[in-house]
Length: 192
Image (cartoon, rainbow, N blue to C red):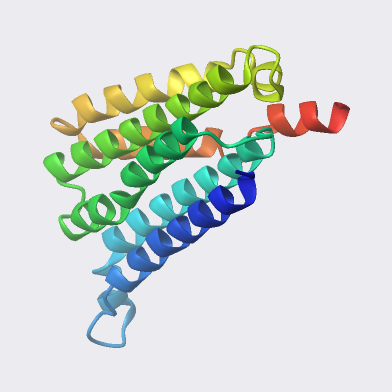
């Protein structure tokens, strides 16, 4: 199988997740800034989650451009990633509606951690299928952001039970570090 079908499926899923999130945002009753300010946690959690979905979409796009042939293992690893990404709207809504309470903020971090692990697994399934000489293996090498991000999620989860605002700052910091799409693959593919 070529990657186009897998990429189209994943693009559609990520678009659905973003749509679900925006549909969960309720318009405040009233027409003042004070009424709007009452829903700031919901909006802030939406912005963070939309950013994360955009990061995954960008990097997933680059990742699939290194694949020459899709295997069954890749399909399942990709489905695993989509599962964790599909929980982002739920975790986002729960966190925003509960004004960044400890348990919702910890759950949000857990979903981010598990999505990161699923992405890592997808990368490694692709490399295992295509070999150590694959374009992906040559492109990604060892990258500090990929190793530090899951550690920061775990720290954020633990801190959420004491100071959820610090957890939120950690999650936002990880997202900020990934705002520029992972250029390793792009640079490698351009050099071929």
